[in-house]
Image (cartoon, rainbow, N blue to C red; front, side, top):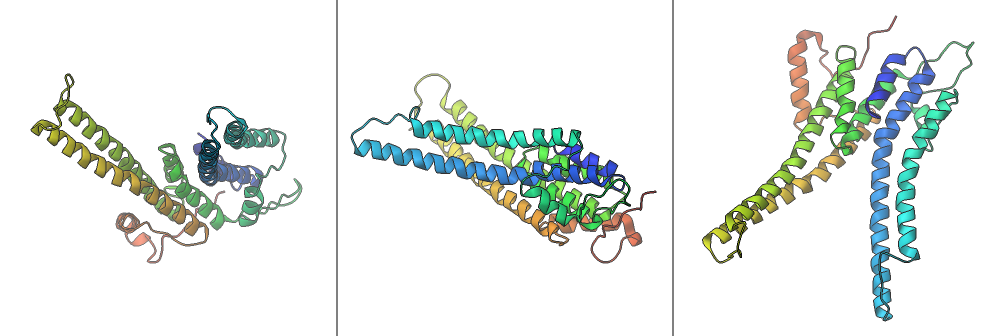
Length: 298
């Protein structure tokens, strides 16, 4: 719901309340772009921690001491850092919610001020005429966060799906970006689960061919066939799952390109989606890139 609600809040309150619109877009950024940064940082911490534990193990072995990774100050510090970093990620939105409940102009560290400059957001007094957020950058931020959310398995598709539903007839730019992002994320997710399914299918086939009971005979034709099939499925699943991180990286690149002002198209998918949209709209669609104009609210 952390992906869906900020988009709904922004869509409902934009051009009514700069405060609500900005806080919604900031929350969306933290749940998608912030999650991307967090998960990558978390991965680096885990890798560094494991490397340190391996080094400590070799040092203990060379000194003739017994090293138990379950105990010791190094291991305790490793888990404190890992779970502490995890807790901080969930603590910040709670602080943000409390601050917003009291009407404070909350800013996430690093993200908040940068987003405010990107959207031309300047807090104004109640008596002053509101200076609305930069519309073009609003749309690009929402579209970009849809691309970044690819790292959130399954739930990340809520971002482009919600945007598509809300802005289907209001912004050709958001409509195009949302549809191509949704298709791209769905294809990546299917590829990931297909790799897992193929692996378990090969394992199950090996299990059935070699027999549930008795000692497996690797020299028999059935045993060799089972091993061959399992090896082939293992290779296919490994290749498929290995492709998924590359597709995730492409999704991050797409989000960056959109934020920088490009009308990014995913390879093959983007052009197909654009042709489909143009064929449906016919002559009403401009000849250039799909525009991102929106009907002015009353």
